[in-house]
Image (tube, rainbow, N blue to C red; front, side):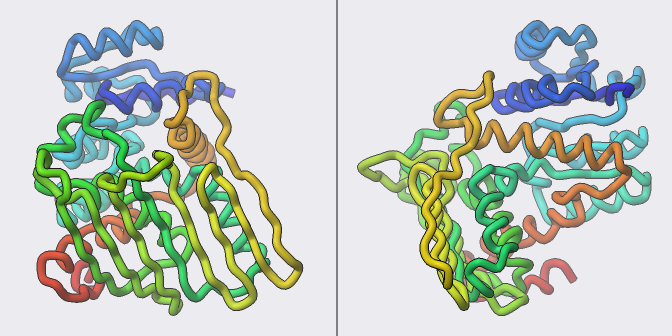
Length: 344
């Protein structure tokens, strides 16, 4: 089978994981890379043996010769690059967060749909092995119908050392991390119609919030809490694990430290470990996220080959992005926000 040829825009901190993920797929070859920084361009190009290197996305698209593009840049450039890909009718994956504003995100979805190209957001946390295991339990009916859930990510890990720009934005934890946790809540519990949120800034050296607690009213009647923190000092650092609690009509589920999964239902209690695989190029503690990168990219290629919409399509991700916007609005106003106010 002929390989899918891809291009990558953005050769920064996280993009190296994406390049490893692409290299692991036998039916994919990254044939071109682009970055404004010539040093980063050469580091990634040399490491992965990519000869075509560009400092201009326009020039790279003009030369063409690839079947999809992976946009791994910071959020401010996303709309222009997605619209450029749409102009050239090249399927595109875009790093999260989707866009600077919900209006930009909607415009990007419109541009992709008008061009007839698939657009997927690299929302990889729902592809983590432990989260997939939780989803499988829910779908099996082992604990009945959920009525309450919690998605929790609490850590004191120094994320700013590898990504110093995170300390400078007026928005931090909801936009950078909470978006993942909110997407997990949608993935597990369905879409939400109402959001109530509270935020705090504990670290005086950063500009944005580093703690957020969000209450979601899901359309199917489930209530969930999504709480995220980078200011939590624990005896054992859990980064980058996401914890999940679910109460249901016939039992409970708990995903805890070290990927311990406890499921209690009518047939008794089972305990297992749903740890991610440590890929050859991955490193602890990042291996959970790194494996999910490989899994979502595999999903993209499978859907591209089948001509089917990816699970985290641009249109789907508008709902996750709207939850982020609703959280900031709720925290600012001190009131509950209806999602229809944002999505229309």
